[in-house]
Image 1 (cartoon, rainbow, N blue to C red):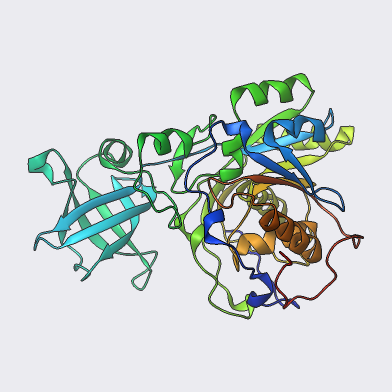
Image 2: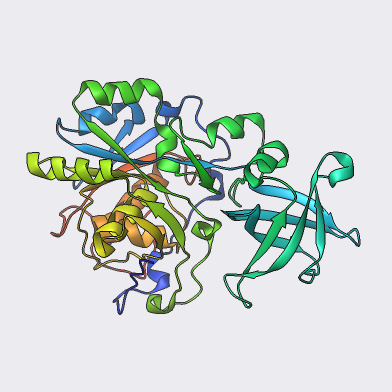
Length: 371
């Protein structure tokens, strides 16, 4: 397991807060994937673009790395033997028809209890037997053995696990659009949202421009929405997610470095995978990497990402990559210019920088971004 957390940092949780008007939280995707807005924040002054302009920011020889995880229909509804309603959010599929899930219920059942999902077997649904907590007896998650193959049952009876800030129930549009066009390996309960902006026409343009593409897999967990509850960031326990670095991607990274190209991560999940691999040398496993300002990046040169929740670990990650003051200025520009935020929102282009930038907000960490 790869675990990297800040031993000490001059920043606290409050430093990553900002005011976000609720109406800027996107509830639906843009009409066209590549028609969303793109904030070019790779230089000292943000530039407003459209996402399909992205190839103009790239150079032949660059390597773009995508997360090819596939979102599963992980939200399931059912009831206990007593009739009490419950909801499961499957976090991970284990061998032997077992799953690990978050459970929302008024009173937790005891190990050995059966739950009846999607109406139970009598109504064409299925059952699950509670085996205990996970990963240990005091774990926050619950392990169930299902009466059938989990992926097939979720595909038939499950719902798209939309983020908590999207208020509508899932629809056919969500089933299509809360999924990348190149999703390959099922296992995520949240989309790698930066990659939602790519359509096949844009991918073809990248190929024509001489941009090499590679993939990693990180199954995004519900912990990505977990709030940080401690002001002292060194006390935060990062959630764990499974990743895989294919040998073809390791080879593509070596070729990119040899020709002097840039490694461009599409999404923070890709950043976490690449930097976990660089830190540990492990090509597959679980990672709890926690990237905050002061982190030494070993792989990623640039990042395409959406706009993130206040006080989130992802705000800390982008601040580590591009500089705390720069990100404050970028977010102030995005709010002022009515960019759409979070999973179905717009995107930004960031580059790795170590030198101070001119023309952005100077350090005043406890102030709100200007709007």
